[in-house]
Image (cartoon, rainbow over all chains, first blue to last red; front, side, top):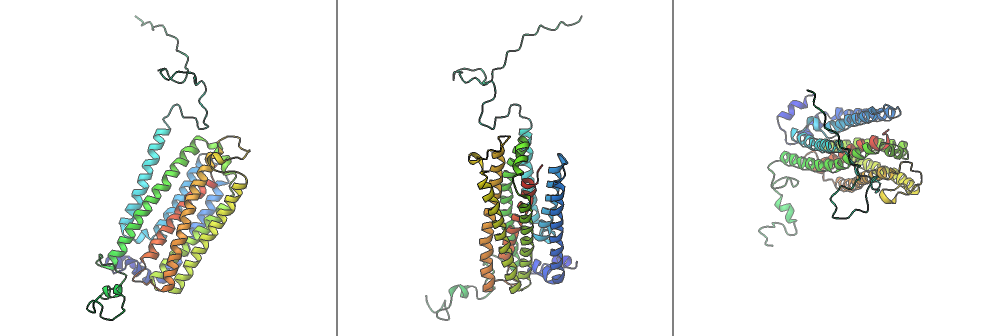
Length: 152
Length: 229
C-alpha cells in the first residue's frame, strides 16, 4: 500500500493519485467488497430464518452495521480520505444515538401509555364536567389505613 | 462589448475569463485539491442531514415495534422476502458499479465510465420495478398506510401502523432512488460530452457518495422491515 505515503506529499488530486497508482488493485478490491457484502446479505437472510427471540433484531442490526461500515469505508473512500468527512458521519450517528437514547428513556419510563386505537382507556368518565378537577380515570378511593402502632 | 475584453469576435466570454487556468477550477478556490475537498465536505454534511431525516423514522419504527411486536411481526409476514432480498442484491451491485464509475472517471476511462453509469441507472430502474410489484400487491390486498388500511385479516388491529412505517420509509427511500436516477442521468450526459477527467471528476464523486448512502439506508431498511421476528 504505497499510496498511503504518497498521500502525505499532497498531490493535486489525492484520490486520483491513489486510484491511478493502484489501478489494477482497485477494481479487484471493489469486487471483493461486493462479494463480502453479498455474503453478509445471505447471512442476514439465513439468521432471520431461526427464532432467536430478542437476539434476532440485535443480529440483524449488527450485520447491517457491518455492511454499512464496509460501504462507508471502501465504497465511500473513508478509509483513505481526509478524516474530516469521517468526523461528519460519526457526528450524525452520535446525534442519532442521542435521539434513540432519549426516546427510549422516555418511552420505557411511562406508566399510562396513550391508547393507539383511538379508544379511551377503560373506566374513563365521559360525563364529567369541564370544571371538574378530579382525574379522568375513576380510581376507587383507597381505604384509610389505621396508623401503624409503633412498638414500644 | 468592446474588442478589448473579447480579443476574438464571437468568443465565449466565459472561456476568456477562464483562459488562464483550468475552466473547472472555480475562482474562489486556490487549487483543484481544495475545491475537491470542499465539495466532499459539503456532500458529507448533506448526507449527515439525510441520516438524521431517516433516523427520525427509524426511531419511530423502533418505538412502535416495541409497543406492538405482534402486529409488526404479522405485518412483515405479508412482505415478500424474496423480492426484498433481490432488491438488496440489485442495490449492492449498483453501489459497486457506481464506485467503479468513480474509479474510471478518476483514471480517464471515459467509455468505461459511461458503461458503469448506464449499469447503475439500469439497476436503479430494476429496484423501482421490483418496488412497483410489491406496492401493487399491497394495494390489491388493501394493506395501505394509516386509515386506508382495509384488509380484513388483522387479528391485532394494529397492522396499519406497520404499513404506515413501511410505506413512509420505503417511499422516502424510493424518492431518493428517483432523484439518484436524475443525478446519474445528468452525470451520463456530461460523461458523454467528455467533461470528466482525472483532474476533474467532483460531480461523479459527489453523486457516488449520495448513491452509497441510499444503499446504506436500504441495508438497514431491509432486515428491519422484511426480516424481523
